[in-house]
Length: 135
Image (cartoon, rainbow, N blue to C red; front, side, top):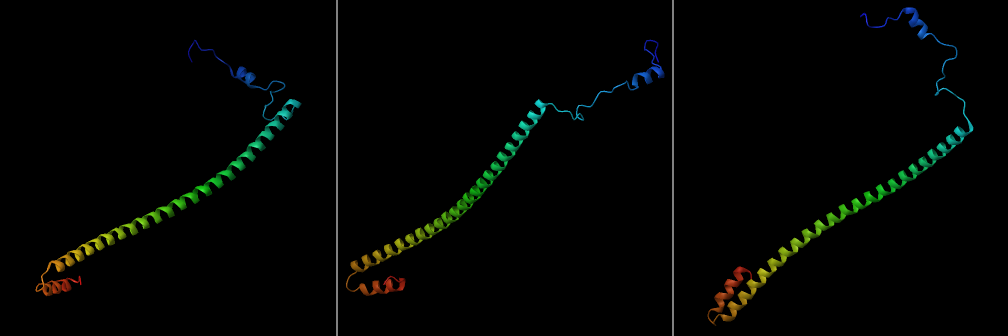
């Protein structure tokens, strides 16, 4: 030890650490309650019960909202599937319409050829149209 530090003897240390008469009570373990504390405890318990009830109501409402959300998601999925099916049907109908327009144009061309063909050429035009499946 250095010369500047105070020296504490073992007797002085024991005396400092020895219990003195009445010891200080731990405030957590004190069971005495006054009237103000009792009222405050009842108010706090009532507030806690109210908060628990609100929490249960909120959980119930959240459950209902989750159910509605799940239902809306299922409806959206079904609508998307129906929309995709309708788009596929529309594409098929467009393709069929284009095919029918081409067929109608070929038939008009064939009738025009037949109308312009002379008396002797009609037989060859009819044979050609039959081969192509237009007559």
